[in-house]
Length: 376
Image 1 (cartoon, rainbow, N blue to C red):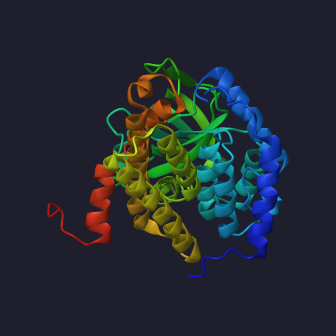
Image 2 (image 1 turned 45 degrees about the vertical axis):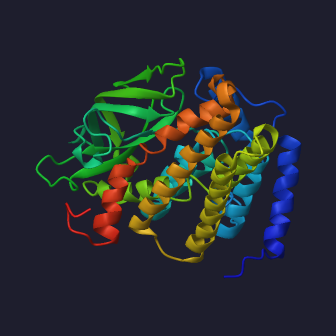
């Protein structure tokens, strides 16, 4: 593999770096998990949209720039290195849109994607249910056939971005007689729909990062179904694969964090503490290995499929190790409210969302390695 970037990549890198240098806010935005912070991040999303930088890899007709996968990786490296704000619409850009490209209709692509690329419509993810977290196939919320569409009943929980977002996508059981992975329908719906109650979930820090959704006969027209009704599991696995893979957690995110960790080590570490030094070196190596894996992945013109489970376990555990090392460097100061502490708390969730790492190891054992159930 040729690891040298060509003129097109370097030109795009320079353009991206210059734009970010000019536009990234001088002070960090408030947490996007608060009402004021969400509004500030929504405005930032619009600023990105004006420069066609929300989804650079999308075709120009949908508001993107049509860049190559390698140029997309370059953009992500520059974005995180610049310390730019977190992107409030990753559910829309990285999960929903990638699913629509594979399973959506031309009408859906033309209607749904441009408002995302412009930063105008923010999406929430409505998958998990009480009693059916990582066991997505165990969901019990229903979609019942109605004239021209479907009526939704049931409850979703831990719906990310739902307290302040505009629309959501979710999976519902439309055939109770079908098998666990069949009879499911994947739909999109507005969060202000009649019959839908959005109840924010308050965390210990008071930030409503998630919400419960209660459906009482919410009507969804047929044109809001993703893929084929009753066969939503296939489309949902496209979403899950992107949530576990490079799309949601690109290498640039970890490279930038490790570079900041190295700066913290130079500032705070005891030079004689070889254990902390070795931990930093290990994390640096793992971040660069993830970058190389990213190059390898995008060089293959095929769906990585279940291999995304390997990626998810790798980046989630790297994230925890990175932030644990930062807190150990900070010592007692690490217990104070800081970006490193907040990042550590969020990193712990990474081993749970997108399918717990225990589930991912089952997938790796059974579907990648071909081991029999119970042999791991």
